Image (tube, rainbow, N blue to C red):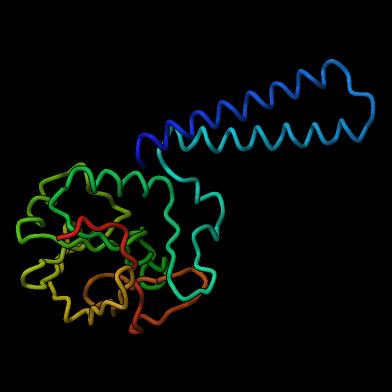
Length: 222
């Protein structure tokens, strides 16, 4: 998130909290009727909540979309929207900042826990595009390794796909039946030997062999 947006959020947080304090001071001096008291109380609660949300954005630089399960979902339901928790948002920001060789990053979905194994499973699949040297760079950057992230790297020139860490995997985008639906959405079939199957959304139970949707998180362009 740009610095100016965080500064703006901080100013709005201060304004909301100042308004709440002013209302409390006004109420402390005495409010005659019950209706005015209730309205003032509601205004204080709203200002405090808004101030807290703006303060969260200012301090973390992240949008608090995780507070609402349906935040970011398409109204028509035609496009997948993956709910990204704050911890994963911070990880994606770190990945973007530390690895400028990544030209595109896609989220493929979340692992369907408990389907094939009782062990701890990665929670998120990511696919990044870059040069042939990108996978070696990622493998040497131990600060990016996470047990709950399954990171695949696609070579822009050859179309080959391999896993950056964890269970070894080598394949191709053709083997994934990767197909761009739009600039932001792609369709693919998770290969059986890539690890446990993923699910695109927790609202539906997808078969492991069925085509699933991926969503682009960012792109640096050519």
